[in-house]
Image 1 (cartoon, rainbow, N blue to C red):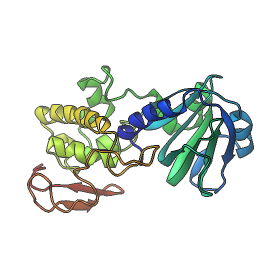
Image 2: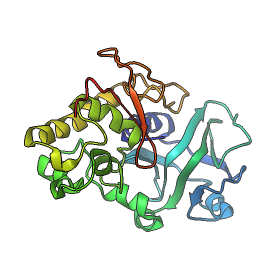
Image 3: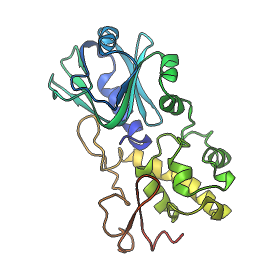
Image 4: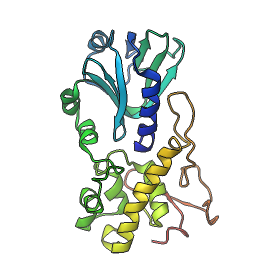
Length: 274
């Protein structure tokens, strides 16, 4: 699953690989996927994209944007695997393939679910609520993401629910999902189930700093070691509280894995005392 920790380095990589390339051909929905949402019919995608010149690549939260000189762009995200090939080689199970004049290609394959949308900025904002939320959100790395904004956007200031609910649900912080949250909470020494109402002012501030610092660290390492980039290489950040973790890497205590709020949470019962 692409989160903000992967979207930023992946967008930088895409910018280096794709800038100034021209789309010679494209293949749309070669393998239909009922949980791949697109905002145009396959033939419309093809008609619009052929001949487009890549201007640059960027991201909004956990969505990667390929922007063209014409003013339109593609945005894709969620559980999507993007692979760049130097030659015209790709599988027959994909939802979009961009073939460039250089002979290289970019292949997008949806796992559980994903969005691939095309249009100008206004069209992307109107395409669905998830992409609009990502495009309008203030990044945790932006100077405008202040401590006061953090408390408000997560609704921690309302003193309702748990930390997982505050940080990884309802698109409170687009791009921060359950995968990234585990290590953020580990760094703050707090458990996912901890009630927001029991946070002390000091713990809230530590959580704010842990959020920003851990995201910066993951990005610096090119993303988590569970997610591949456009060249098929795993990120170099070793996830501390991964689903495969058996013992805490700090204290050696067996980690706890508990079903909670629609997914499993992983935490160390010794290091995360509350």
